[in-house]
Image (cartoon, rainbow, N blue to C red; front, side, top):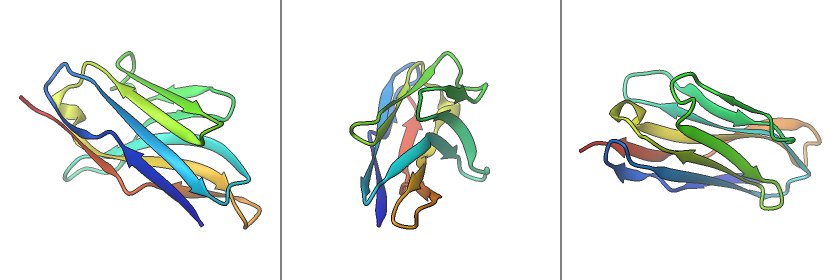
Length: 120
């Protein structure tokens, strides 16, 4: 089995920063893309940022220049550094990863989500 465990969420004032982490564990043969999504109350889940196995990144327009995604392949971990946070960044943030486990094919896995609240 594969698990994604997120950490780093919390309450922060507008303009502040947070760093999210997501570690993959279990029987892992290979990890392709890793990414972060978010879902605000009453809204659909949306892409925040993704990073490929060789480090190519993609960001939602709303977070470009403020958020940075990175990964440590040795630790099977992806990070999201969030700076200049705004109230509209408030959401549950989910980690996603394409992982090859015992099924010998890549499958999507999701973390349990971590709450980020930006409020004064």
